Length: 400
Ligand code: 3PG
Picture 1: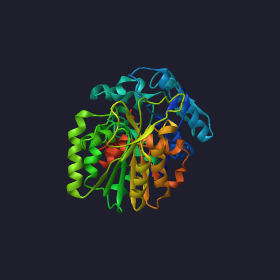
Picture 2: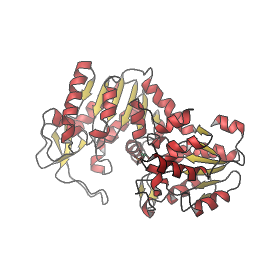
Picture 3: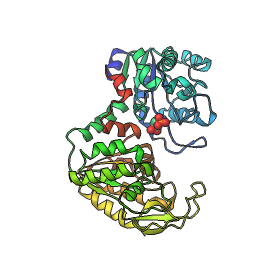
Picture 4: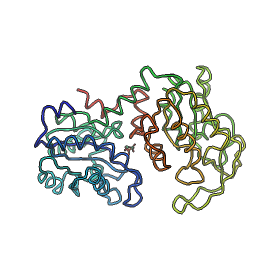
């Protein structure tokens, strides 16, 4: 982007592909981290006199307009953060978008409506995606990719559009890639990885890769139960991906052979019922050993012994990567495990990277100071796929 700015962008329409996919409670943004993260790029372009067109997806609407997924609240928040009026187009490439962009004066910013209101954005068909990219290209003279959270998606605005316009990477993408490079090249050891979240199937690729890289892997969240099952324990009605048990068993064996310490919960908080996340009514969980989960109960957080164990396993780390909460942190009775991991990272002198929408949101909503962490990534799937060594379409498209 610095080269683009040096060449001069005044009066040019610059399309910024951001990731404004923020968590919403109705129309209230519960974590605006992703919006704040794109502000430096938008600001630099606007200050240089560009006419900035910001675009993003939000959620997973079905290729047609759906008010529940409007980018309106995100556009308003972007305006607050910029301290400037931000125009909002109520469609993506239609009359409203064309008129809004045509009405932009130098140094002003517009947000167009959710890219995924158009089926072409996510289409698997190259021609359909290309046709939508052509329509987007008509709105701009230049392209800046800065939606790091979406670079693993081969979508029209991420992959096809940069091929149609002179393009550059924004500041956020440059920062994110710089940090992830530190985790893949010449990593400082001990390198400890904490993985949580619901599904083990989302993490298999990264575990496979990390077994060659990390010194220690700590597992929590819903995915822990498939590993506990692979160790031969019963997990009651906990989240379980039965079809992934053999893969988990293989990973446990490989970790042992390679001398990678693979750590599973030793105790968990269980309940017969999933907590009410709306009312947050007390859930009264009980603590049981991880190999003694009752048949009618489900594990919803790591227990107190595991919290201590994981803090001790993080204490001597030189590098930490954390992705995925340890439990249902949205409910206060199941937030302690995620809090304990966040606290251990915050206290650690290691280079700490928090990746993933959920863990990043957890860190902020649980009241931690972002500055206590080395880096909080805006990418969930994107940072995992980067660590897996995969080619990310949105980065490849910006490279040439
Ligand atoms: C994310 O939240 O990880 C990104 O915004 C990508 O969203 P997606 O998984 O719906 O493509």
